[in-house]
Length: 105
Image: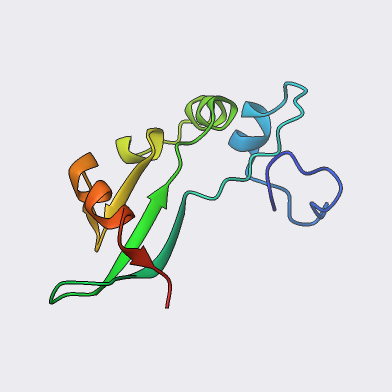
Protein backbone atom coordinates (compact mmCIF):
# COMPACT_ATOMS: atom_id res chain seq x y z
CA UNK A 1 0.00 0.00 0.00
CA UNK A 2 0.93 3.62 -0.47
CA UNK A 3 0.79 5.49 2.82
CA UNK A 4 -1.85 8.19 2.62
CA UNK A 5 -3.83 6.53 -0.18
CA UNK A 6 -7.29 5.92 1.25
CA UNK A 7 -8.80 4.94 -2.08
CA UNK A 8 -6.67 1.95 -3.09
CA UNK A 9 -5.24 0.66 0.21
CA UNK A 10 -6.93 -2.64 0.91
CA UNK A 11 -8.37 -3.10 4.41
CA UNK A 12 -6.76 -6.55 4.45
CA UNK A 13 -3.29 -5.07 3.78
CA UNK A 14 -3.01 -1.88 5.83
CA UNK A 15 0.39 -0.24 6.33
CA UNK A 16 2.25 -1.11 9.54
CA UNK A 17 0.79 0.54 12.65
CA UNK A 18 3.85 2.75 13.22
CA UNK A 19 3.33 4.28 9.75
CA UNK A 20 -0.41 4.65 10.28
CA UNK A 21 0.19 6.45 13.56
CA UNK A 22 2.86 8.69 12.01
CA UNK A 23 0.52 9.77 9.23
CA UNK A 24 -2.68 10.36 11.21
CA UNK A 25 -2.58 14.10 10.61
CA UNK A 26 -4.84 15.07 7.70
CA UNK A 27 -2.70 15.78 4.69
CA UNK A 28 -3.07 16.32 0.98
CA UNK A 29 0.22 14.50 0.50
CA UNK A 30 0.28 10.91 -0.63
CA UNK A 31 3.65 9.62 0.53
CA UNK A 32 4.81 8.43 -2.87
CA UNK A 33 8.17 9.51 -4.21
CA UNK A 34 10.36 8.75 -7.21
CA UNK A 35 13.85 8.94 -5.75
CA UNK A 36 15.88 8.48 -8.92
CA UNK A 37 15.67 8.41 -12.67
CA UNK A 38 18.49 6.91 -14.76
CA UNK A 39 19.09 6.66 -18.45
CA UNK A 40 21.92 6.14 -20.89
CA UNK A 41 23.36 9.19 -22.62
CA UNK A 42 25.97 9.47 -25.35
CA UNK A 43 28.75 12.00 -25.97
CA UNK A 44 29.68 12.93 -29.52
CA UNK A 45 33.40 12.82 -28.77
CA UNK A 46 35.83 10.90 -26.56
CA UNK A 47 36.80 7.30 -26.06
CA UNK A 48 33.99 6.52 -23.61
CA UNK A 49 30.93 7.82 -25.41
CA UNK A 50 28.20 6.09 -23.43
CA UNK A 51 27.49 7.01 -19.82
CA UNK A 52 24.65 6.51 -17.36
CA UNK A 53 23.12 9.72 -16.05
CA UNK A 54 21.14 9.46 -12.82
CA UNK A 55 19.17 12.30 -11.26
CA UNK A 56 18.00 11.95 -7.65
CA UNK A 57 15.34 14.01 -5.92
CA UNK A 58 15.23 14.73 -2.19
CA UNK A 59 12.33 13.43 -0.14
CA UNK A 60 9.75 16.08 0.70
CA UNK A 61 9.27 17.27 4.27
CA UNK A 62 5.95 15.43 4.90
CA UNK A 63 7.65 12.18 3.83
CA UNK A 64 10.70 12.85 6.05
CA UNK A 65 8.47 13.79 8.98
CA UNK A 66 6.39 10.62 8.66
CA UNK A 67 9.51 8.45 8.53
CA UNK A 68 10.97 10.18 11.56
CA UNK A 69 7.71 9.82 13.50
CA UNK A 70 7.57 6.13 12.59
CA UNK A 71 11.17 5.60 13.73
CA UNK A 72 12.46 4.89 10.24
CA UNK A 73 16.09 5.95 9.84
CA UNK A 74 16.89 7.19 6.35
CA UNK A 75 20.33 7.43 4.79
CA UNK A 76 21.53 11.05 4.31
CA UNK A 77 21.53 10.79 0.50
CA UNK A 78 17.71 10.55 0.53
CA UNK A 79 17.55 14.05 1.98
CA UNK A 80 19.26 15.82 -0.93
CA UNK A 81 19.08 15.70 -4.70
CA UNK A 82 22.08 15.22 -6.95
CA UNK A 83 23.29 14.12 -10.33
CA UNK A 84 25.46 11.05 -10.86
CA UNK A 85 27.46 9.95 -13.87
CA UNK A 86 28.17 6.22 -13.99
CA UNK A 87 27.30 6.03 -10.29
CA UNK A 88 29.68 8.78 -9.17
CA UNK A 89 28.48 12.15 -7.90
CA UNK A 90 28.90 14.65 -10.73
CA UNK A 91 30.27 18.10 -10.02
CA UNK A 92 29.24 21.20 -11.98
CA UNK A 93 32.27 20.97 -14.28
CA UNK A 94 31.47 17.38 -15.23
CA UNK A 95 27.85 18.22 -15.96
CA UNK A 96 28.81 21.26 -18.00
CA UNK A 97 31.19 19.18 -20.13
CA UNK A 98 28.32 16.86 -21.05
CA UNK A 99 25.67 19.47 -21.71
CA UNK A 100 27.15 20.91 -24.89
CA UNK A 101 27.72 17.70 -26.83
CA UNK A 102 25.27 15.19 -25.43
CA UNK A 103 22.50 13.56 -27.35
CA UNK A 104 20.25 10.53 -26.94
CA UNK A 105 20.87 7.84 -29.53
